[in-house]
Image (cartoon, rainbow over all chains, first blue to last red; front, side, top):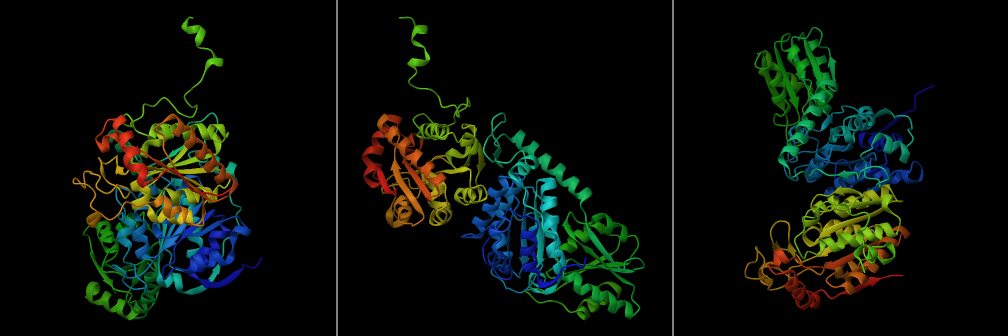
Length: 360
Length: 254
């Protein structure tokens, strides 16, 4: 059977994938450059077909708390926003992580800080993988670099979120959200029945049936000894995720003498940089982290024994480079190259930076 | 007549609601929360909705409401209960969903969530305990603190020039098209408790018949925060709170 190939924006792909993946609810608030997600869902009216609930909330704060409530009943729920809106959601994200609920968040990043710009950026790396909200928690972070991955990571994000009872986030940027590409949408999944939800999520607050204790969704625990136990349980889960769920892609790394490390739209540009460098006789490869947390620390550490230097190429002032340096642990030179404020680098700029900062 | 001759089922006039468990309550002596919890437990059981009810507890004194009523609960961040209840009800329309919120939670930090859930006409019950003070954090000024009423953050009494006016959020909610019932009740006398229970039942019934948002405000005391004996607090409430927050239905659509 021929694959059903469609042409659409990354944001639209997220919306269509959510409907097809059997998502129960989406709660969002408009913000550029990701408003097409809510717009597409509203235009598709999935409540008439799959029964999916779609609601425009009064704020990003309300939207993430709707996700918290929906997730607390075991439903497959998601929200999306862009950088300033994601900042507003941090309180709710921390509560969701603290209550160990599965959900999917999408951040189509724009330049900051503050209201910043509506142009693409990757400056929310720290916010996403190092915390963002209060407390010791982690978000399973998927960084798509194509419209196809925008569609695919909806399902992957929910699968990982439910596997570990932990929020997952798609960390995209304005380029991936706005650009149009060919995409094969996932097949239709039925939404789970109430029975299937209670079988998968026996902790869900769905109304206390006879013979079980009340299900209470909370992150509150005033007894410090119990709260420490809760935190140790979270940490054990995070170590398990770090062990099992690292994803990355290698591009011409086999014989590489130098490596670019880049995610999302930066990685797309860096593929061209690799081609151009090789045309000049520079043995350059690209390692693209797909999961930003868990970070591909071990594979980068292995490459530190093989290559002469690494350049972390990011649309920010140097964030992921810190994780690359931690992985490399001083063995080789690691530098950062980036553009800020919504400016996107050209392949030539990156190659020049590699020559000046690493090869020279 | 011997005691064991009196203790017979036919002589029973009062019992602890089945949904209330044995956990000792953390509420202060004289606090209205205990009675309001009891009324909610009774109404849920009388409606036969024990296995279909999800409560959303707030941040504030009732943060541990989930410790006392054996139903399923979701504990909200401060002020966010109506947003959470919105999603729970929309995703599970067959469930009976209520929030339980204090004045700071509902009328200060959660004003946006409250107004918009009510304006959408979410089929939920909002139980609003208005004691004009932040009890849990030790008696600070609330949006509903009366003019001249002292609290730890307005120790010389609420000064309108400095702090603005006490917020009649019930009146505001009654103006919204999405609400079907907004009523102000109290629980300081047996008669008041009886009346309040009737309105609470109506609110829960509304939520299941799709009429829109029902708000039951309980004008309440906080004897610890007000620094009064429970008896004095009740009297003070009647003399000072009731004139500003008069009891009765602000809106009651059939």
